Image 1: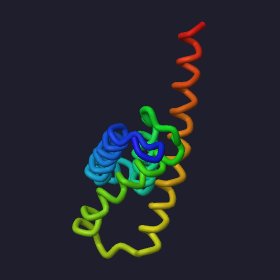
Image 2 (image 1 turned 90 degrees about the vertical axis):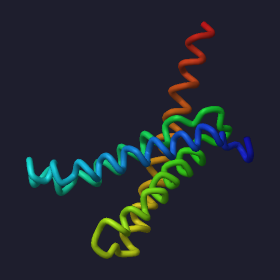
Image 3 (image 1 turned 135 degrees about the vertical axis):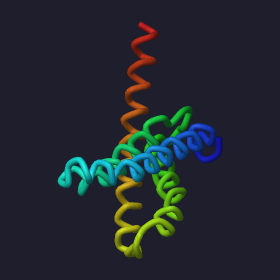
Image 4 (image 1 turned 180 degrees about the vertical axis):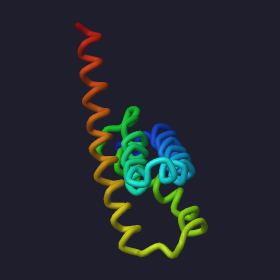
Length: 126
């Protein structure tokens, strides 16, 4: 563990977030065909779920907010080459905005996951 980051948990979280992002991107055309309104917001919801899923499991990190943010951003940067290859030209503002959302949502998920596990441990000792 370096600088309060659990590397194994971080790697697992990055891959979990990546998997959710890829599956969500593959399901988006189906969602758009079934319900056009749902299809329009499907990728946004998928991104928030993926970043939450990635950042929640912080393992033994001493800085869960930092780890959650790093993990969520890592999952986004891992999927980013696929975005550039598979879609129309991507605006730099969109990349920066999505990276910011990843950092914020991942940090919140990391904090929430840490609190949930801390409460669970306190409950076990009673």
